[in-house]
Image (tube, rainbow, N blue to C red; front, side):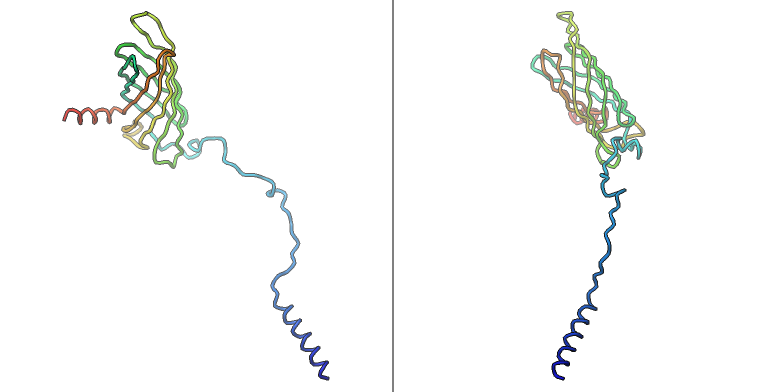
Length: 186
């Protein structure tokens, strides 16, 4: 009798332990429609989906410096969404005229407007009566908002060459250029 009682208690313990397990064997289904697909961002710039909160028009006073020449100039850029264009002209000792595309690097949710630009054109040296091909590349940093569609605060940094000499270019928006000139006068 004692043996039957011990065997019964062991069986009851085993049954109660078995009853407390919460795991249930569930068959695993493999969803072939979603398991092998990889998701990635679209190749189209987000500005085309969300719109552009940035300015479209930029006007800057520019300066270029090199070992054998320097000059002052003006740049106008129209950049409606992602791609746009610009015209640049410099003068002092030589005449430089260039134009080219602009590309907006910023996404609609960024706090700063970043652009890359490139220019092709020519420079005219009056001493030799020759036209030289010219090229410029650079980066513009602008505030995200301005007065309407015109940007008030922008700065450019770049490099320019006529394939004989190398020059560094810098530009300030018209409003910053005016403010900087007033500070110099005071």
